[in-house]
Amino acid sequence: MNLLMMTNSFDYFLSEALAPSDDFDALTRVTQKVLYTKWKGYAPPGTCTLIPLENTPCYPNTHSCRFMALCPTMRVPGNVNWNREVVYNCVWSLLNVLSQHNSRSISGISDNDSNKRAEEAKIKSVLITGLATGVGGISAEKCAKQMAMAFADFNDASLNEEKWSSFNWDTALNYANACRDTYDLNAEHGDD
Image (cartoon, rainbow, N blue to C red; front, top):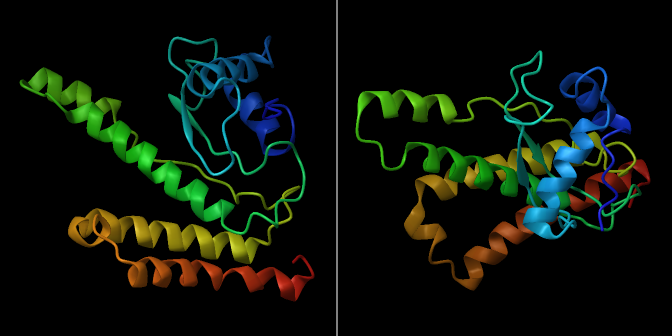
């Protein structure tokens, strides 16, 4: 089970920004309910779960934030340097969830009013922090490199369906080796 209490580290500030002032634990409850429905309470590290905030105590909020993307990097707070690709996997999962959400928002559109509603339902901007760079013990440099690599690879996959839908071992190993090149970044800082 993930220890999901939206009251520590950056999660504290999310609760401060999104939960009603008289119910600080509201974001925790909303998130735990979605996690139970989707994952029976345990979202594996490296995944992404979109948490809808509309029709919850956390909406409206001062930032007009309609969703929170939960990308766990650990089961419970602790060092996750051993999970060498968790940042890459979280970002890849995030990009997939956003792409699927936005695709669903525009499917089946037949009139101008539907077009407008579908466009409004899309997620157009995302605030993302360094993943696992606090208690997770991953250096900012390694995090940034894996985040950038996930963005580049996802963009390549989106533009080159034929290539990405028919990998062979050589291609898969090339991508795996590129991610492995990020492993040694923490060795300089004594983290590995």
